[in-house]
Amino acid sequence: MAGLPFISKSEAATETQKIPKLVGDSGSYTKVPLAKDVIHLGLVQSVVNPVDGKNPAPGMKKNYYKHEVKLKLSMSRKDT
Image (cartoon, rainbow, N blue to C red; front, top):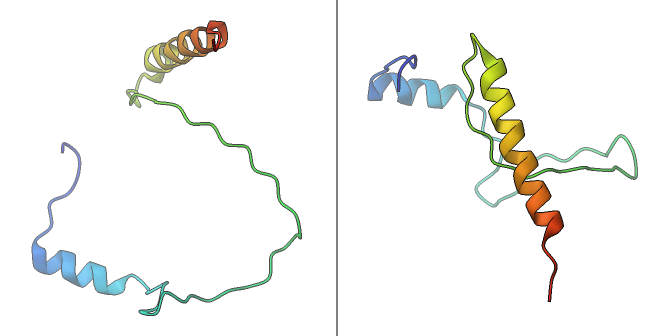
């Protein structure tokens, strides 16, 4: 993959050891009380194609257009 640095297996093992273990062998993990009793989530699942970071506008427009077409098609279909 272009732009990603290459590291050896030994370097990768060293870097992996630096990552803190978040889940114990038994599957347990540190828990803290929630800041609020109720939370609201809004989720959107869509396919997004990568865009050129130096010139994102054309890619963003293409992604939006594809999403808009799929959304309109799904809204126009009737379950029978």
